Length: 156
Image 1 (tube, rainbow, N blue to C red):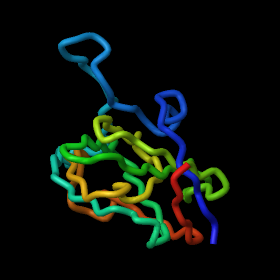
Image 2 (image 1 turned 90 degrees about the vertical axis):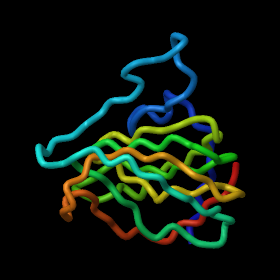
Image 3 (image 1 turned 180 degrees about the vertical axis):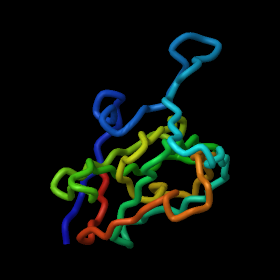
Image 4 (image 1 turned 90 degrees about the horizontal axis):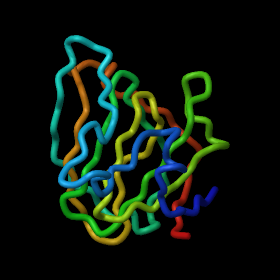
């Protein structure tokens, strides 16, 4: 089984997959902090609350997901740190040879670009809560999944 070692997230390293949502560049707020994408007229913004369980190194990642028509943003409400696993697209599937893993501090959010392959939300040690924003219309086009070779996640 492959092991993926997490590296600390930076805006530059994450740029091919979306935006890192950190402190406002210009206080007191930063407008357009992340790119909102929605390519379907019938899809509506869904602001959801998500509970994430710790990865604990016990369960391998066996699939990735993507939202082809919408960005997906996660903003921590209560989390110490979490893992973000991403892969570029290759012919409609995740490019498993180029999977990256990031360790994200609990005060930093992320915004996946539409079409970015990613793993489910995983906190590192304690359960976490996140606000999640995505555009959905309730059809199968909201989210697609792709199996991958099992992947264990390790801290760097």
